[in-house]
Image (cartoon, rainbow, N blue to C red; front, side):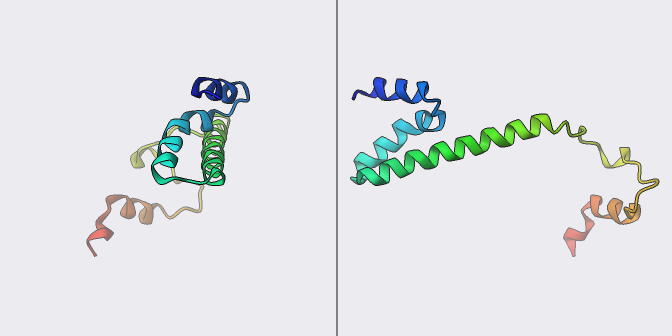
Length: 97
């Protein structure tokens, strides 16, 4: 099977992680004379990593987390958080000690 056919098949199967990593994995496999099992394992690892990254990106998108705030914008009133401690930590002075 030619490279373009392999990449097309990966695209049709929605194996985007494998498709992205294919050239690098095959080049390394040829240089290091990997066994077929190692090549398949590396392709699967690339696919798993891509799927995990995509899942995290999706979860962050739907989480609708509030935007980051500056320390001066935080409202500590009505919370059990120690405002003095947080403001002291935010200065970073503890790093000198």
